[in-house]
Every structure is written in structure tokens, then in C-alpha cells.
Image (cartoon, rainbow, N blue to C red; front, side):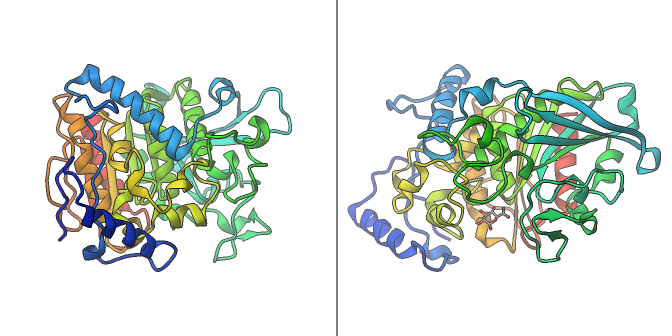
Length: 428
Ligand code: GCU
């Protein structure tokens, strides 16, 4: 296995040339899946201010944290427009039942809309809470879903999403609309009963309610309200993360939910989103990145699996307008993704990979967790707590959990069991 060069070691001119050549070679061609072809790279130092001074304690970390947050906004995800930060959405509870899951849980649908914009998008939040939440607020998982709220559980009372949807292989989406056949289609990824049985609530929302996931020149979704992004402003990941924060604004008011114990979860592009939401909003008590890969937990400089260039080419609407400038020179980015993970410190963080998901670079996700760990140490906590990547299906970690599960790019009960155990340990 390739050894990382020590931090701050000056890159030799040979390594620099090799790096340059390899980035050109990797460009738009086949993704690299060969560890020996990972270019030499030097990670930006987590605990060093931009002016070169060292970060030694919690107080200094608060400043460094702000510096990093600004860098991620400026170079990767874009800034949230001020109007979006300030806006207060109108809350309407549109349905509430107390006999969900055969009486084990309550189910509520809440719509969040723009007060002065009848044509604006409406975010539909589904909240499922265990019976005991009637008497005492419970901790909750909050995550965006890919196929509408009705996809997470087959109960026909969940409202079928009417929002624009990407076509699916199974034909459950017709003319960009979810059909009845999509009910429960994603239930394997959302083990509702298991979550409820463990005493947690689950809140979810369709990501396309916030911004439909295609490159439309930023016309629809919340862009219709806040306008086309100005230079340096958010892409779709920024809008989705904003939607999570708005959902949390609501959950803080919900008597069934303990607003200080809301954990943000996301898979894949929505894992990138969960990380960006958790970074910006420290109200999230725990952050979960499931197979988030490039632009999420994986180190960009490794260029293993999906690269920055590939992601910006395939999904030009996800990030800000500056990130693509680094397509062919990721080594010049002032940040790498371990520093995004560090923005969760000192809160608990879960990073999960799948063995068959090389596109998301499991090893790069582990290294990111490892190199983020010094941020937790400033608080007297341990991050991932191990140096070597653990064997498959063996979760490790103190305040950062890491595991690589057998199988493909997905969310399974194995992943959720770890998240629930970690939540029991750190949040409940
Ligand atoms: C694509 C994309 C990934 C993303 C994934 C997903 O594979 O390249 O970056 O994580 O889709 O969201 O499912």
C-alpha cells in the first residue's frame, strides 16, 4: 500500500511533475482503481491557520473552523445567499396519525413553504416517532430521500410525492412523477421499524422538493425564489443542505422531538449534503456520511474512483462555480475533505463505505476520517482511534465511527445498526 508523505514535507519536483502528469492522464478517462497509481500528494494541514500559525487548543480551533468553513463555501459548495439563511418558512401540519406501524408510532406530515411565494416550492417533511414521544421528546434521525417520502415505507397514508423525479430503472417513475408502485420502493434503505424500536424518531424529506436534481441553469426549486446563484453562491448540494437546516428549524419546535439530539444522515450525494449541513450547522448532534465519496468524505487528492473533474463534468449543478477551476489541479485546492469531516468536531461522526463501492474510494474515506481526528483530540476526545483501515464489516472508532461493509453502494441494516449503536453511545 502506498505510504502518505508526511505533512508539510516539501514535494520534490519529481513528485510534482508525476502528480501533474497523472492528473492530466486521469482527466476524463477511465477512473483509477489501482492503489499504486494514486499520485503523491500532500494534504493541507488541518491544524495550521492560513497564515502558518499552529492551532493548539479549542479556542484556536473555533477560529480555524471558521476559516475552513469559509474555504469550503468559497471553493467547493458555494455560499448560501443571505436571504435563504434568514427566511422563515411557513409550517403546516397536513396529516397526523397515531396508529402507524400497528400503533407503535405516530406519523405526521408537515409542509414548509415560502410565506410570500405561492408559486415557490414546498418542502414536505415526514416525521415518524415512537409512541413514547407522546410523553417525552426523543432523539431523531433526519435525512433526505431520493424517491419521495412514500418510497421509504409502504403505508398508503404517506402522501405520494408530486415533485419532479429522475427516471428510475424499475419504471416506478412515469413522466418524472412517482407512481403508486414507488410506495416502499426504498424501504430496504430506511428500516423504519428498527429505528422506532430503538426509541428514535425518523424525519425525512424528498431532496427534489428543495431543488430538482438536474442541470437546468438554476431555474427551479428554491433557485426560483432566491434567484440564480451569484458568483460563489451555492449549487444544488448547498440548497439540499439548507433544506436540512430548515427541517431542523421545524424539528426544534416539534414537541415529540428533542431538538438538541437531531442527527443528520445521508447516502451518496445526500451523504455529501449531510456533511455540508453538519459542517455549517452545529445544531446537528451527530452527522452520518454513508458512501458519500468524492466531494463528501473521500480525499480529493487521491484521485481514486470518482475525481473532482469527473464529478464537476457529470454534475455541473452540484457545487459552486469555482470548484471546476481545480478539475486538473486538485493539489492546489486550499482544503481537502478530511477538513470537511473535522468541521463536525467535537460531535460524533459516522463515516461508512462499502467494499464494492470503489467509485467512492473507501480507503480515501477512511484516511479522511483518520486525518480529521486531530480536531477531536483538541477537545480531549479520540477521533477514529486507529491507524489502519479495519477489515470489512468491523466498525471501529471512538468519536468518529468508520466501517466498510461487504456489498455495494447502498444503505443496509448493517449500516443502520452501527448508526443506532453509535447514537446510543453518544447522543441518547
Ligand atoms: C454518482 C456520483 C456520485 C454520487 C452518486 C449518488 O455515482 O458520481 O458522486 O455519490 O451518484 O449520489 O448516488
